[in-house]
Length: 183
Image (tube, rainbow, N blue to C red; front, top):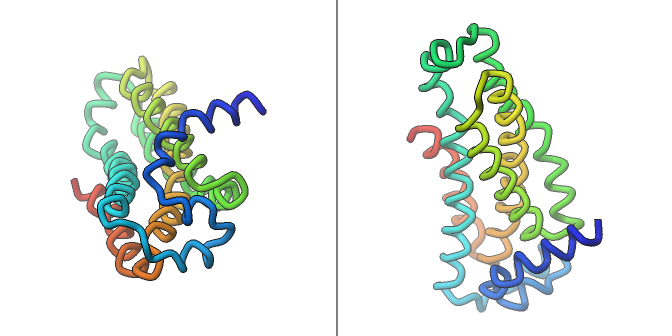
């Protein structure tokens, strides 16, 4: 476990350098919320990174619905199995969100966010290469876990980065998932 934690620390070292020190060292959301000196360029860069991840999760939430006829023919699956590609994603995403929220408070938001993005990205690629419907369901469940894990950590990151201006930022951030579903 310690090796994994050290690897994660090294992976996010460069990413953390764009976040002002007062936010990185904040011990609570109240301390981070008092920070008002974040340069706009860095603040919006942080917002863009987490918004892009949320947009991808929103897109993947509904993209399977468009592909249902293809799954039925190309993967030779029945409708009940194809339905599990949607249900598995939504179920795992819903289950992991409160767990990821707790982990992001204990291990750090950026660390949980990075792990979630990696899990989401790798499982998305694996789902695209799935040889049959059963593997597709497995990868979609894992993909849902990754997508569900970065929502609470990303919300915390945006909240910390925007400080007193967090309300409109989180409002805009919340609409991005819905936009992904529309795309």
